[in-house]
Image 1 (cartoon, rainbow over the protein chains, first blue to last red):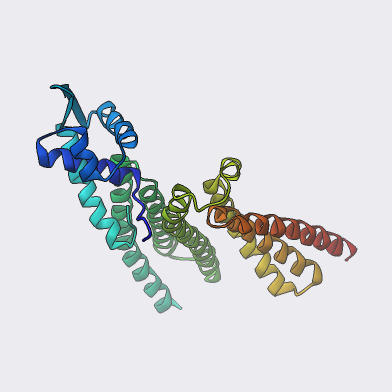
Image 2 (cartoon, rainbow over the protein chains, first blue to last red; image 1 turned 180 degrees about the vertical axis):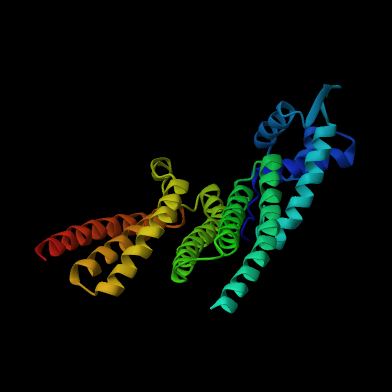
Length: 91
Length: 209
């Protein structure tokens, strides 16, 4: 079956959505939800933390949570995704 | 004549309303780009922005021509001016449509590249897809002018020049689509070479008189 392409912004949204659903999430849970291998997820998570969309704390391993900026990003993404879908463009 | 001019003025007012709608859509897409940094939104925003700009320029120009210059000494002059702005408007609108096509093609091209289905990576480093499509959009005006010139003159020189610019614009489109197939890269080069040969032949032919 052909693998469907996800843009970077969609992967960001998938990761934030996964973390938001769990409140605080570990890498393994995000990997499963966002369907990403460890190395790629780590890169994206680092980018999201650098952008201030996620925060990291240590609790026997890294635990991630969504910042207010991250929640706003997800809301904006969902809104613009609906618009782009209406135009026939998939993000 | 005056009835037709009144109708054009009404058309300008309707276009002014269209401008506000178009500008709002453009602003929405630009905002989406600023928020999410997605290039597609920038292209759509630029396309709608270009359309909005053309609409505003056209409607204001028509309103000014028909309202401020009311008592024209020569009634034909405003019609010539209207014809000019109409031509400008059409070219800008076509350019906006080119941007829309780019917006729809970008995800397709990017997907092919990301999935490793595209041409060899070094080619993608050498050729900037965005630059290629901008070149094509800029050449569009020249293609239109040379095609109209050929249609009017019907001379061998003008037909070669027009064909040359058509080949040149198509070469840029082929380069833009290179990530879809490596064949398009060679097609682009073939078209570019053909374009230059046609332009050289056209210049020589025109020089002969």
